[in-house]
Amino acid sequence: MKNKTPWRSNKTLIFGGESGAHIYTTPNSGGNYYFSMRISQEKKYLRESLHTKDFESAISKAKDKFIEVRANLNEGKKIFGITLGELVTKYLEHRKGHIGPAGITLGRWRTIKTYLNSFLRYKNPTMKLSEFNENSAYEYLNFRNKEAPGISAVTVRNEQAAINSMMNFAFVKRHINFQKFRFKEIKIREDKDALRRGVFNPEEYRSMYSFMRSWVSESRKLDDEKTTLEKELVRDLILIGANTMLRIGELFNLKWGDIESLSKDTTDEGSKVTVVTIHVRREISKVRKSRTVISRGGEYFIRLKKRASFTNSSDYVFTQIHQPKKFRKESFYDYWHEIMKGSKIKNYKERKITPYSLRHFGITTRLAAEIDIATLADIAGTSISQIEKHYGHINVAMKRRAILKDPKYVPAGVEIFDL
Image 1 (cartoon, rainbow, N blue to C red):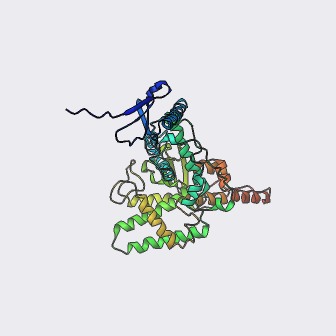
Image 2 (image 1 turned 60 degrees about the horizontal axis):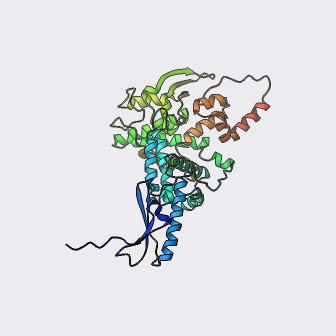
Image 3 (image 1 turned 90 degrees about the vertical axis):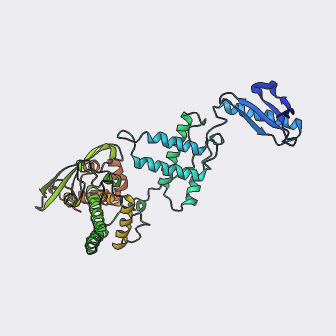
């Protein structure tokens, strides 16, 4: 039996052989030296080429490498750390465990996932966490501006917050030795026009309302019951959204059991209205706080329920036509774009007119009707400061009207503005 060729040769210990650190060559290395040392904390051996055939140079490089590794270990860094891609997977799995009544919504989890996927386009998922330091993501803002021209500063800031939450998770798990990245400062300009973006004006809303009436009527003439029922559902969803000011996520998670009452009432002017009382569960609320919404527009729930096939208390209000599953958001957005074009809403994409604009419109019209801000904030599930910040231009107009009123004027009771 032939003797095996030694795998290593020219083995020389450095620094007295501490941690077994040494240099060596192999039969296939062509005379190039390698460095090796045991990382006892991770129970592995580190092996790297020194890219030199000169013994003295190899010794010098090996000592530098040994000092570098020991310094990193003393700082708590892992030499054989996980990759960025592995961290994202671990963190998302960790956050998924927070989905629930006392935690986050599934929609919020998906948003976090989207934010982190943007970061994976900025940094290679195969990068080891040991390659990062607190300045490694400083130019993230520039990257996102180049990748997505016109992206809002608020969006980038939200992405950076999600990224740093993940990095803090990595720090706690001892994958890295710093808590968060330092990002280039983002200056959020309080641009009045920017704050007003995404809001219908009354004429546009009336145009959309009129278009949807003919849109549904024309559909009924076609021999396509499913499409007609879907269009009727979408129309009611839009009208309910504008009246109740519910967020889109809240609307899609609304169940028939959340509708506490539907009743006829009379306004101060004597007109008849249908009032709906809705319990918004904390688990479907963006702010994780339950609230009661009292609004006009109850008639839309009534006609929707008459057409619906699934109306048990546990069934969603907006379901697919032939199965008790949530109505597909993809289908809803397809219809939304169809309605925007049919209503001739100009530049709706550039102005960021989205289904969320229904909530903005509802709040705007109620402020214009001089609804008490504290009451409005409670119904809308937001804070007074948020309303004042984003709808301040309307609030200023309200204050101006207030000081011009005759002191003898007695305001009518607070009521929901009829859309």
